[in-house]
Length: 393
Image (cartoon, rainbow, N blue to C red; front, top):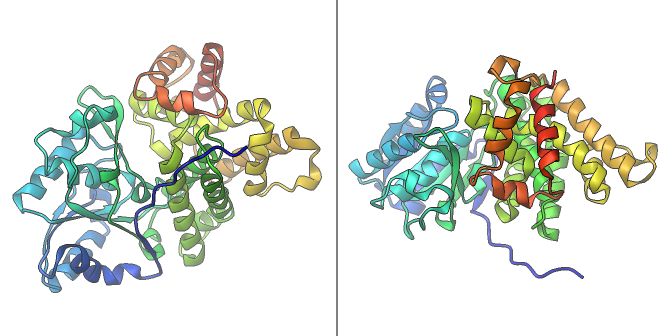
């Protein structure tokens, strides 16, 4: 029998080529004709000129706009607090997050912190409830990976260098804008890493202990969209059709993980981020590369549909296990084909770090992801998986 479930509505989403050109209309609809807007972005995107162009367009439409670009990859609580302080200083009534997952996560939590007395670290791992009435926010992803524009989660680092998360419905965007044009300039390595991040989201959501038929449908479609277009956008960066499909796949994967959560690949991935600041998309992909065949052996019934969505031809396989394992092989072939670095030696990690990696993977901020995985690992499994991640070549 199907179990009962509730699926909360996702943020309002608008998709289209050159959709960003209508941003001033969105700002008026959410914050009025003379809005006070803080755009949260990062230094890399500032170098492209896009944030300044967006700000200029909004100013020409009569809005007061300031830019905040003090956001790094794997953002910190300090940057969230700084963005919140800037929002208070200009009495912002709208925050626009523009960039990859890091600026979007900063924008989401800063919109809450700005109306509260507690700093960002107070909300880590649901340490306290988020404010009920944050500043309204529009999120515009320039990568197709994290799905942060569709989730009620913000991931960030603390002063003691732990990678943590805040969660709550007030972190949801008021509007998410998907415009393939703004993803076109993303370099190939980042296109690959962020796209694989979306693929990991979709695989984990589809097979999650709290997955539902609704989540499964979105996640499988996300797998099809990403797996079918990632190599194409890496090879042909200007292909807006493929970029658009990647953007939709990433957003669908974001909706899926927002409904149920992530699994063991994200627990290991967050731990790699804590230990060596490994880029999130690469970290979770390297973890999934090892965890996927391990999980396929235990639950081939769950992972056979994933293999089909990845593009495996079932006519060449005999039974769910063979099909599921072919899916794991397809996943590895995909990450290799787009040039994702597999060895962590250059990040300063190796077999000597197995115990440290396991310890951080089961820390309180990561343990819920381990426990929610489709296949629950034993202590011995965790050591085996950690060793395989750290010694890959």
